[in-house]
Amino acid sequence: MMNMSEPTDKISFFKEYLAVAEPYKGGKAISEIKTKKDKIYKLSSNENPIGASPKAMAAIQENLKNLHLYPDRTDQRLQTALRQFYNNELEADQFIGASSGSEIIDHIIRAFAGEGREVIVSNPTFKPYIMFSSWCGSKVIDVPLLYPDYKLDIRGILNVINDQTRLIFLTSPNNPTGTHIAKHELDELLANIPDHVVVVLDEVYYHFVDADDYTTALPYVKKGYNIIGVNSFSKTYGLAGMRIGYAYTTPELSAYIHQLCKPFLIDTLSLEAGIAALGDQAFIDQTVEIVKKGRLYLYEQLDRLGMHYWKSQGNFILLKPEMDTGQFEERMLEEGIMVRPVANFGAPGCVRVSIGIPEANEAFIAALEKIIK
Ligand SMILES: *Cc1c(COP(=O)(O)O)cnc(C)c1O
Image (cartoon, rainbow, N blue to C red; front, side, top):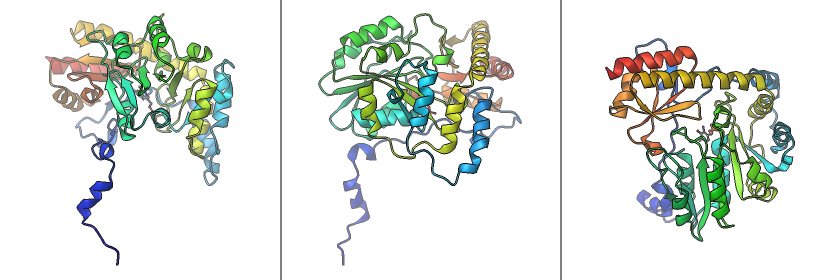
């Protein structure tokens, strides 16, 4: 008979850093919410306020008949569609498809980080960078954004880079602050980092930007810098329920990251939806217009109510209510509005509200007015 050990001994073969890791929960679904209101406005997960791309929905319908077949083995068709979307400025194999923005972030982390390696993040920011990095044993170094403007601390980042550093996560526009990184800031950072460090620029909210000094990773990839642009179909394309995203980088880094891509990683419907959505410019234009108008409306109203908030380049706004954020979230729910407290993103005392259609924005403002009285 095998020598069975006590159940508690099992802990000894857990990886220490994984055993203490916390799961990433993401934002709540409407179905989890209890409220007396019949109508719930979900302004808590930065989703598209007008739904999904109609071209993507048609592609999904069209492909239901293929569900018994395995999807494509590789991301090749998405690569080709992306090359076209980027006007042939990059080669197809410089794109890496994945089953969401989060998934591509995880791929990148597994490719470059891990035990004995370090990752730099700047809180408050998107939580998965930190969680996925710790899940594979990397040490995460936080160089916080500089309060109160949430500017990137370039000197601070350069100061903590050492021989173990592999990745620097930058987010522009940043979630949850809505702030962006100016071109001159990225220039300065890239000019000063050593060759063994890769910059990941998460640009999933880029469609909503109106700042003149904004830049994506594209010009830097073209010049051959060690930089990876990260994108998702969840927000602007309205496909959060499908799970599809992508990254783009230099041919060398792309080939390396592709080593980790599992066959059949992107399911049939997500792949078809993503490819179709890239060609749905009318839907993107409409989404961006609604968000930009909503943003201006909310600024005006938040100013009128004397609220403390940050101007945003994304489809959401960060607020600092003069109230406990848990209580604020609950009072908002009583009014049928879902918002997101973002202490776990590194912004204690703050709440993020997504920009909705005019009706939702007005409902949010009416609720806010009631609550802060
Ligand atoms: C939403 C989001 C993503 C990607 O989300 P997925 O739904 O996993 O594609 C990536 N980065 C940031 C900053 C986000 O807010």
